[in-house]
Amino acid sequence: QKEVEQDPGPLSVPEGAIVSLNCTYSNSAFQYFMWYRQYSRKGPELLMYTYSSGNKEDGRFTAQVDKSSKYISLFIRDSQPSDSATYLCAMSAPGKTGANNLFFGTGTRLTVIP
Amino acid sequence: NAGVTQTPKFQVLKTGQSMTLQCAQDMNHEYMSWYRQDPGMGLRLIHYSVGAGITDQGEVPNGYNVSRSTTEDFPLRLLSAAPSQTSVYFCASSRGTSGRDEQFFGPGTRLTVL
Image 1: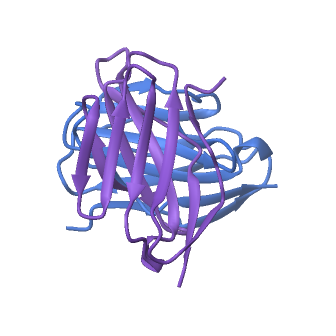
Image 2: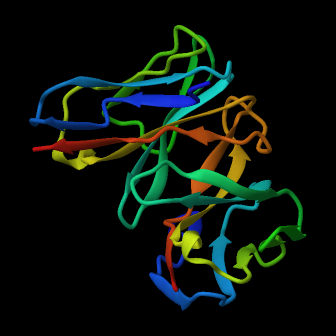
């Protein structure tokens, strides 16, 4: 069983819809929770990160973490065609050297239809 | 400021050949890492480094070697390429080793092993 599980989709929504993306995890040592966005044939780029349970908002994006349920979510309001990309959840935990390494979900491919 | 650069963009190898994937960053980042991205598997950590002369294994290190002689460069060596190493390889770097330090990704190298 992977430490981070993410529904791969694909997910297709009309422009203006609210999108909900989710991940579950099994490792209680995960401390930071991130969402990356990856456009086709490009490297991932950080969208948002959170440290504790609760919500964090940035424009049309809201990240939610529930550590008791080991569940994180990303909500996109008023989705736009430019949001079409693969969204990867990621979580970090200290490795042997103390450095925080990232563990990724498989990614959810989102298409927003104009 | 070029960020994280990777060469080559594409490479085709025959089974048993060796090669080096190059990665460089010009942000004076302490932490550098290599990931491979495969369909249905997400991004998986191969090796990482917390500074010049210090490297450690990630989740899937077998068949790969790394070294870090300078802060800027972190090459990934395939010793004897196998078809199972067909993948997209991403290099990333971050200022520090805390989970809150954003990792910046390069554009990727697409490798095919025949």
